Image (cartoon, rainbow, N blue to C red; front, side):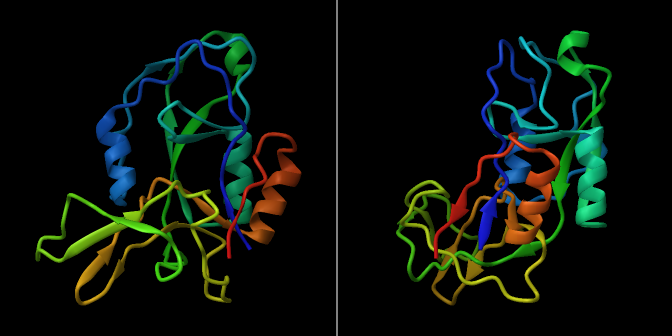
Length: 198
């Protein structure tokens, strides 16, 4: 099965102010660098941050404890960037947080079975470009079966055909079944159990 790495919703008073350029890079699959992360960002909330969470724009970040778990479960597959969160101690409870970038790419969306719509933006060669018509968790989105070579964690790659480019947002992080189960066991109650369709 394929799982979406989706933290349970957190109610912010003030969400991390991460630049739109950072989100744009993640959507297009540009590898992040230290200079992409803001020097400081202010956050406000009422209770301690979970170990795996996301800002209102969907950018994922993790605590030191979650970083250690990911480094153990998927070694060498995730890059971490310290996130300087300016927040009250009751929010941080002595923990550091990291923005992260998932390095492997895989192509598991079944574009032949999923509903698509044309994109305004086309590839440089002028071919048609299409994207998913609905959100990634919509039942109309179908995935191919996980294969032995599928990474334990990945961001989706585009599919290029001679006359059309199928564009997938690289913002979403996907996990193999066993990877999600292991992460969920360590951070019980922090993740949404969202299996994606076959």
